[in-house]
Image (cartoon, one colour):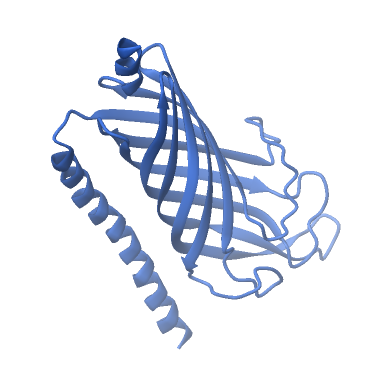
Length: 239
């Protein structure tokens, strides 16, 4: 019975990945044709930071060193249309350790590893010279694992259990871009994700029988390069 339930949930999550690819495949050429204008393509590298609102003792330390308590990396591809619309596809990896300063009590998460795939639509409600502000929304697929502490038999030993993450959901957010040197830009994005379709639906998300984390808040800082003419270039010529 349990195996059958897990196979069913796994199939539904695989379907979510397929839907992301299908949605991207249909949406991009459709909108491009509808706008009947030249588009610009953007590639971006970004650093993601996530908070999961489940009581995990995140210290807020972000570093690229080996002692990092939270380390992430991501890549994003976007298509910008001449109007205020754009579509993006992004993927990120995130690793959070909660044991760097103090031992994690039994029943809590010791370490979390996640990878996300996002398909999002952006509406640029403000475009002024080199600055752009956009509201965004889309669908998210999450894969990864969490290590839950079961106990400490001896002072030098630790027993953990792996909790798999195979979840899908929706996200919304705000994004700011500052363009410089014609084709480069710096970005800052904040977003919220609710995972509505979860591999393990236990609730509340804590303790030995915890389910997948439902809520996630993200903050992304990135640098990008755009191929094609920029909106702010047209604005500057008009001013």
